[in-house]
Length: 311
Length: 281
Image 1 (cartoon, one colour):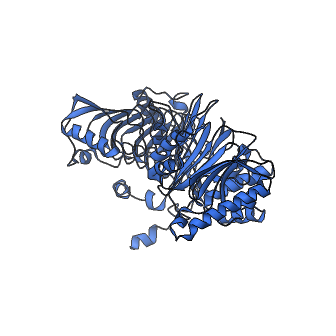
Image 2 (cartoon, each protein chain N blue to C red):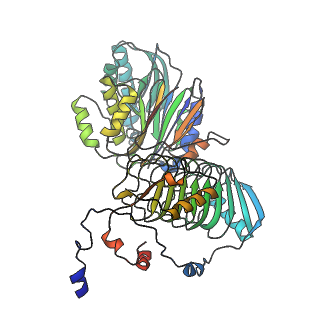
Image 3 (tube, each protein chain N blue to C red):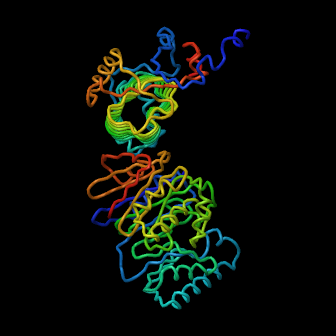
């Protein structure tokens, strides 16, 4: 059991960091292992925002060498960005092992991503003009304080609280997943995919990379592959309902859209609130209520349903 | 044993035929037996004693304990303000009570109840009124999946739309849905009645043993063993009265509701006497 949540400010922006933190904290009982955010700020088309880590949280507790290693790894990533013609405009260190860069780069993004991830311990959490993907171990309160998430202004967001069932408790297996190599595409998922390995092997043969053994990552890669072949987001999502077997509800976000898809058995929950200026959705209504003090209308989407909203 | 060998061959009993025929409702419990049944922790309450409290800052346990405390003091009308979709509220109430929730409930709301009349102004989450035995529950807005799961008696009414698997494993009572119901509604339904005034999702009545489903809108598809039945004058009159009780109307009149019943003979179920069916259920 995991908890997922999403929100969109239609035609405006708001403190999506604080709102998503409230929603995810109220879903803590659905999964306390890790918490993740995909926050969509105000897009700057000239620069890229790069979120990456150079070690797992648990690695930092193993000996003294790791503290030197993470510095070396970070320095190597800096060097590789420069080698490919990129320029680091702004640098923030969220934790000892996680960084946020704003970079000027107009080259091949896939090449940049592959070159950075070739560094030992290096993993890109997100790369895009609007998306900032943050995830770590613990509940929403802990992660939001660690990464100073409240106050983040943006248009839309998705988030996840994880109860690990089929892969490890680490950042690599935490949601959201970035749909590598597509800028600004992220996915969160609640459920189990029963044809994970067959689909994964097929996608790996096509050259896609997987960083974890978490079945949820498959959705991100599957959508990235479909879009890479020319499908629109909504069409790719509709195809996924038939292609992915199991019980699932997932949310996907792009720089200007947010979508949800539900399996054909309607076996995993999702509650929606939709108004002219705001849309919220979550595994449980209690999450939506956490940001609405007044009475609102909510409803459940049905089996096999796919919806996409523009911010 | 001799008799079994000679007369109860499966083919003779129709186990292997595909001849489909609907069954009618049967009453398995005697009223006298139900009257003699009491709960040790039911409270004597007075409907004229009214209390209300704000649940905004309270957790599930605190809210349920507060309801119990008020019932133990004889309050028969209780209003809960700002439930804020918290889970498992109003469960296990085993006596008459007028209970009002001014807002929405989360999962497993008002489950395991036997007797109270409950009105919920907002929406309810998954598994509302699970294992309900008697009383009435009225939801003014929408409901999530597994609405009235394993329900055994009473009336469960949602004026809006409900999710998937409505009335799954239903064993009695009546579910009324003002809007649409999702996939697999009436799955493994064993007794009782379900009235859906809007559309029904795919696999309606899948693997149902018994019971009756009425649908006012379109049915996406019927499940395995579910077949159309023929409306009788008696049940049309019953439907008219039942919907009127809750100020609801069939879209084109009760006569035009589509009636769905179980169509397949079940070896271990159909050959039981009514009293034996009670033990099975």
